[in-house]
Length: 217
Image 1 (spheres, rainbow, N blue to C red):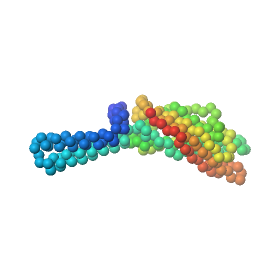
Image 2: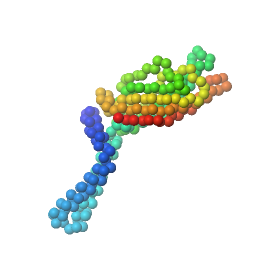
Image 3: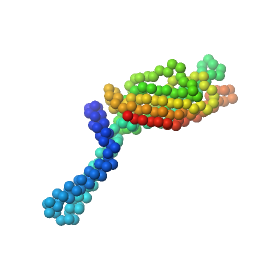
Image 4: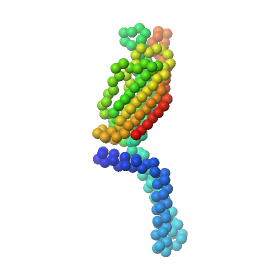
């Protein structure tokens, strides 16, 4: 059943870009056909106009409802990045070494559950990257209208100064865990500004990120 819904929604998604044109042509064709049939039946003009207007309205409402259903039940392009979070902490056993633990929230904006798998998750801050960065390639699920937080490997030996970085994310996703048909790619520029107290301990972190490129295919 899940595969069938996937196939139907994917087929409709293929033609979604034509809804604007089709949304006018179909009601217009319905109205014209109704008017032609009414005139062939020798109906008076006021009834011809009434019938054709009704046909146009019915077809327009039907197309609108179908378009709304399509937008709500397709998953392509419905993964959206949200907040970027950074925690700067002292490395255990060190007097002054700091490390950054960063994560990003990924939202599922569709009305369906989405299965996803990380293919690439890279983060650098002021040119520093995590040593031995490994990726969990398990296939996970984001529930409809929900979100998950993707954690990046810890970046060590950073300084308590404003940091600008580079974030790169590649995710395969789909409506079925056995058919991850789509790919989501994101490139962003995170900015992290740690603040320390008088003892040199992390006090607060301000973190934002600017999206440079985002693609679905």
